[in-house]
Length: 195
Length: 211
Image (cartoon, rainbow over all chains, first blue to last red):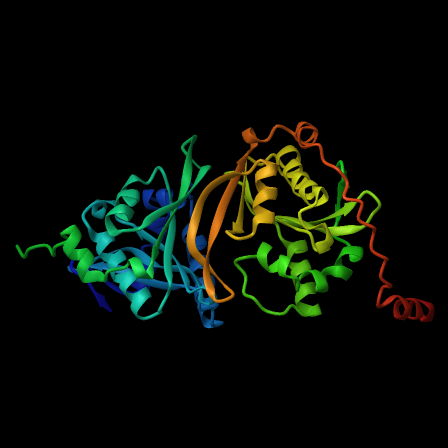
């Protein structure tokens, strides 16, 4: 388990996979996919999770999946490395807060900082990168805040509700990563006070 | 077949495949397939690659040849995304004598023609290693727009190298005929390769005679 201030990163087990059906059919997947609207039945989601488990059993090691859990123990989303390229020491990250009431509260940022620390300090990657779209303003702000650089903007590459948006590529090099504590200090991320 | 000014697009049959083991071990191949791991490609790897592309529902490997039928290389569209009508564009001059020639450029133009005018795509993505001036020049001349630089993205011969990202939209594409007229493509005059003998011809014939 990786312990953060607002969330912990834990294995992506049953508590999370049980929520996949809900998360795939709500707005978190709409933003994550760049504008797709899924109509995912429970059977489709189950088959998808089975395929994922089979690949892992076959020894596929190009991804790492964490569940994001609040300090109260509530599973709220996924974060991980979706595509790891060992010979380039390159990790493409992906995340989804499946419960929209947790958007904008620092939960995703806390999870991202834990993941970056894990990727740089344990997996010894050279660069972390990810892609989002211009409709995802929250993630764009988060990227700037955490210290990623906007590296590429693919024009009209995403379609959402009939409107064209751009896909954006953000990157963070190892030498630009000051460590988790330094970023937490700079952006002023705090644990929620006990009530 | 789709006929172009200097090259034609044709199915990637045995007359191309027979060169592929050489082509897939050339430096130009590794530059074109910049994401992939640097490793030697055996005959079996080559066969698997061609089969994978043949089976793909989201892409294809297409041969391009000179007007006298000399196989030059391949063009690939891959990861076609139906909802957004976009795909990754890849092209290579396997016969490196054609590297950077107008035939090489025409191969790329023919890929754009096919993707925009036949497959009705909206957008194509392409990328190049930052030092690969030949590829970058071809992409620019074909009408691709530079959309950014992925910094230190690819490990290449002891260094992390930037990747230049390009994109072209259907609205950027004036149409093949207009594009070719504007570029004034000229044949390079490269002599066609001698046709290699097919390895299995004799065995196959003998086998057929028996049956």
